[in-house]
Amino acid sequence: LSKGLEQIRDKPCVTTDGHQMPLWVNTGLMTDVMRSLNQGAEGVGLYRTEVPFMINDRFPSELEQRDSYREQLEAFSPGPVTMRTLDVGGDKSLSYFPIKEENPFLGWRGIRVTLDHPEIFLVQVRAMLKASAGLNNLRIMLPMISNISEIEEAMHLVYRVYHEVREEGFDVALPPLGVMIEVPAAIFQVREIAERVDFISVGSNDLTQYLLAVDRNNPRVASLYHTFHPAVLHALKRIVEDAHAVDKKVSICGELAGDPGGAILLMAMGYDMLSMNANNLLRIKSVLRAVSLEWAQALLARLLTMDSPQVIKATIDLALREIG
Ligand code: PEP
Ligand code: MG
Image (cartoon, rainbow, N blue to C red; front, side, top):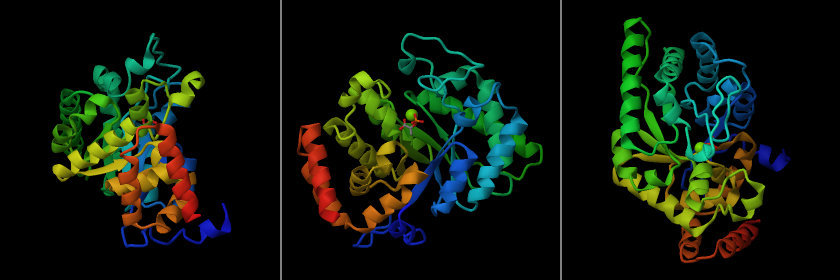
């Protein structure tokens, strides 16, 4: 980490014209938590709970899960920790729970798996809620939502666990519940989704993959995975507008938030929080502190009229060079 960046660790993330942009982190293992705290992160926008599951050789027990969730909630308290329910399938596999499919990214993934196996979901949510007792900084987020009914089913399970855990005597509050927007179908249901939950968060990695029909991990088509494709930019803008129309906050936890050009554009669109890998946090803070919201909005307006991903990317790179 360069000396210049370390100096802004405790400075606010605010633009030259006074716009505040909260920066959160994505975590998986406890080492990410430590690194995030060292970088001055305000909260966790995405804790990928499947990471500890993936390095295990069996499903972690409720108590094991509870202990590791507690550790993270305590480390960030009073800052919020957004725990995503198990997101396996697609590119994320568990050796002890093999899923064999022809099209794993279009198959049994995320919420689809845990609603078919409510025992997995219930144990996990029970562990999360018990871990949050007395702390009140837990947020729960659902991955891969493509149907409203999945939210309703999952909420029903969360309420059930909440009442059970309270009856057992745990001092827990009902955590804010959020949904990831990462399937194209969800873009066109943002209002209906946002009305039902407390927050939404965009998973731009999967959203880009599904919008462009380009496997995010396939090197053969990697040059088609345009993070600044006009369709992606228009979708991201529409999501914020629709969520704000029903007064709900929107964050983004895909890699785009940790990219300097991406962060500038997302701020210009009106995203309420950016959540990123801790390694990118200070760099993004320094970029956002160097620009004005007005300048970012003018850049965005210009980019939204363009139709070539390459020209958009080149224009962003040029603008970044301007600010040094
Ligand atoms: C995403 O899809 O953008 C996301 C944040 O989730 P993951 O990368 O874990 O699929
Ligand atoms: Mg995803």
